[in-house]
Length: 126
Image 1 (cartoon, rainbow, N blue to C red):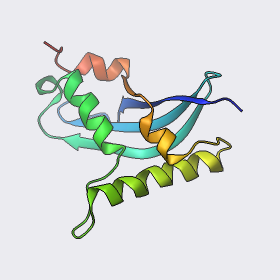
Image 2 (image 1 turned 90 degrees about the horizontal axis):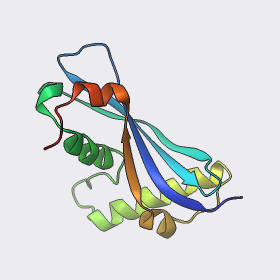
Image 3 (image 1 turned 90 degrees about the vertical axis):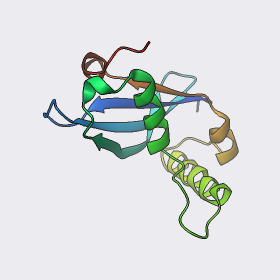
Image 4 (image 1 turned 180 degrees about the vertical axis):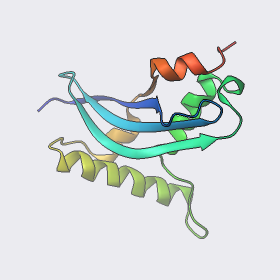
């Protein structure tokens, strides 16, 4: 089995309405072989500000946030929430045949790839 090289979040338009932002975000683990393993495919967000009022930088930052770790609930530390997140991703990877531990996953580079349709709708970065 190949070693892991990076995390990649793919952002795509989710929905037909052009006046509101609605996107899906899919987190994948990329292996040295070039193969990818889906870790999360149930994330995304919506906003009423409109496509042209946001930038690629903003979309990339939001994408990284929505794939986790989540903000902790009351009484839970960020460190605990983050550890639980990375442990969960480790288990998902292992369930899909990839031997990667939480510490290794946490240290990987994390790139965000915006679909052509997202790029066509947003304001250009300055």
